[in-house]
Image (cartoon, rainbow, N blue to C red; front, top):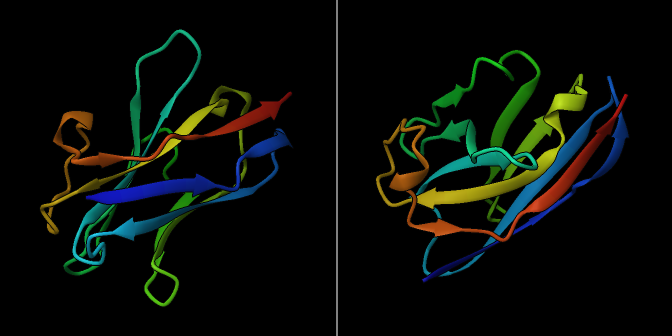
Length: 125
């Protein structure tokens, strides 16, 4: 089992920045592909970004490309999401999710093996 805990959410004005972090415990986390998803009120959960373990390749939703950066800190066993130039439509609960295929570039929520409970990001206009 892998337990994931997100942190770093909060209230920010449009144009501002936040850095989300996902900490892992339990089974060795290091060889999982890691993704971030978000779910706004009344909407379906959507893909935000994915980072593969092998090669550290990053993939982004078009809506966040150029503004968000996904990264990993192996020393702290965390996966991070730096969010810049935030927009009000970015208001959502943000989830990290691990996928056992370390090379996966999948954007599908159904491919995830483990999920955190989420952290709320509110972007005011």
